[in-house]
Each structure stands twice: as structure tokens, then as C-alpha cells.
Image 1: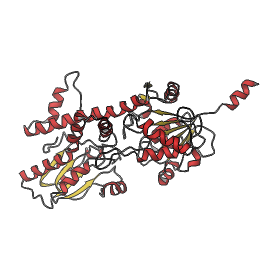
Image 2: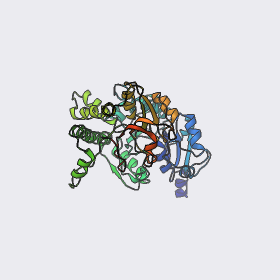
Image 3: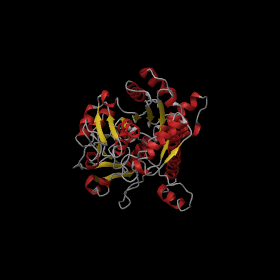
Image 4: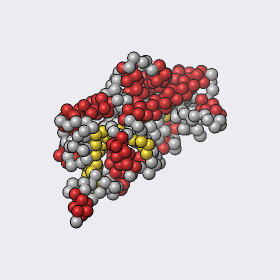
Length: 436
């Protein structure tokens, strides 16, 4: 009889995911296969879209999303999405997955994180655990976010409520390395909470978990993952500049060097997006607060940030060599998202190429079947066409290797004398001008 009462009174874990973008939605879907999950987002249109079974980010196909959706009053496992605060007040795990961008001066913007913390603080109860997945510098969770939770909730950290950090490792557009197939780093504000956070993720992450000893260790592990990639890409971008002067094909060099077992296979290109192009600045900011100027990290960022202007200048040089008039020249940009086969335009460095080309008074047309025109207009004041243009161009620059570009009829797009510049080296079967 006592056992029956105990089972009856056991509280079932209920998870709130705060932020339903590229990171939050796939995570919510995964947890919804085993738990009751409430997805919270302040964007009403996003909530309406998701509850109708559609994901405009294309991270989830409609069938996968619809398979986990449940109604508000359902008591089964599944996902219910809302923008109403009172709908998440009965959760005991709150996982925050909001963006952490940088401003025009590359300084970290923590406003979304603070706002999300205020939201959770308003419904926080004794015994609840708040887990952050957003990329931050070491110390941000306990020094910047927890005080907000304490102030709004009136509760005491590590007495009334607890915190965890588990850095996201989502790769937008990647249908192979999905969230459950990527090993997850976890951590907690106490050893006991660390174990609870680890067990929670371990219950759905088939690739396994790694429990870090502290939240700061987990935070630091995230920023150095992408800082390492950034520095390595900066190195091959610098090689591309050097070999271009020597009239040597960089990709041929990398292919030859790659025959050694321990050579790292990085490729040159534009480095944008919400992680690699941003995370190093979070680590650099914190390092500078401690009185250390991170030379290699910032040098890599400066070089990668310069690639848009470099590509534009190389195209202009090739046009001059072919006696193509620069002023009012028609230039076609193929792709504006930050990576191939993905609609994400956050921090795309293709806009740097466009901006530099416009300084030469050229006419630039962007063709990208993946990018949202509304988002481009809102973020950058740019427009994009979604169908193959019916005109000819003085220059064609392939900046993003979407699958749709592989079989383009370039002869129908180029003039008798044109420049075709392949940033991604994906037009191997087509005669083109030098790329990176």
C-alpha cells in the first residue's frame, strides 16, 4: 500500500525547451520521443508553423515533426509548442537554446540569453534544473545567467534550484550527424546535478555522453571546438592566397598533402554561420578580461573575415584581364546561405563578397533556392531569386555549393567573355577561372 502511494506521487520529468530554432527544435523532437516536452518560443508565427507540422528551417521533415506533436492537454510523451509562459510552469527541466551572436564590433551579445533566463526565472520552482546549450565564454552560465534566475525567481542557487551546461553540437543541414548521433558533453552545478543532467541526455543520445567536471570546463570545451576549426581554416585560406600568387592550385596541394595519415583535411573558403565565425570572439573577450590578448585566435578571425573582400578583388582582377568593363557589369552570385544545402543565412560571409563588389559599381544578382527572401531582406537588406535567371552575366561566382548548382547550364548564363569563379572548387567538370 505504501509502495503504491509512492509510485502514484512520483513526479514524471517534464522538459521545457526555450528557443525553437536550429538547435532547440531537433532537441525538443528527440526528447519528445521519451518525455513530455513543451517547446517555448516568443515568435508567434514560428509556434503556429510548428504546431501545423511544418519546420521552415528544414532541420526536421514534416513527417518527423508531426510524429511527435501532441495537444496541450495530452498526458502522453510528445511535443507541444507555445509562446505562453504559463504553459511551461509545471516543467522541472528548462533547457535554453537561444542564439548568442556578436555585434558589428564582434563583441558578444548576451541579451537573448538574459531574456531567456528572465523567462525561466519567472516560473522557476524549488528543485528545478536549468540547462544552457547556447555557446558562451567560460563562466557565463554561473556569472551572467544564474544571477538573473536568482533575481527573478527569488530562489537560491544550488539550494532551491540548480544549473547545468551541455553545449549544442548541431550541424545545420546535416541529415547524417543528427543530434542523437553526436556525443554530448554535459555538466552540472554540483556533482549530483551533473549526474542527473548526464542521465537525462544519456537517455536519448545514442552516441553517448561525456560528463565534464564543472560547468566552466564544458563551456570552454565548446568555444575551443570551433576556435580550433577557425584557426585551421584560416591557415588554409592563407595558403590559398600564397599559392594563388604562385599560380598553384590550392586544392591540388591539399589533396597531395592529405595522403599523409595525420594531415588535417581543412579546405579554404568563407567562414560564417552561427558557430565557427562567432565562437572565437567569445573566448577572446573573456581572455582579454583576464588581461591576455589571444594573438592566434584573433589573427585567424581577421584572416577569415577578410576573405569576402579578397574573393571580390580576385574576380575584379580576372575581369580586367579579360577586358570586361567593371562599371555596371552584371555579376551572378550562386548561393548566399552560410553553408550548402541549408537555408540558414545567419552571419553568412557571402554578404561581404556582395558588399565589396558593389563598391566597384557592379550590378549583383543573388540566386539561392534555399535562402528565405524575407530573412535576407530583414537581416541584410538584400534580395534573392529562387529560379535560374534568364539572362547572361559578365561574372558568375559560386560561393555556396548547393546541390542545385551542380548541373547548371553555365553556357546559358555566361556571355561570350565572362569570369566563372568557383570558391568551393565544386565545378570540377567545368572549365572555370581560378578559385580559392
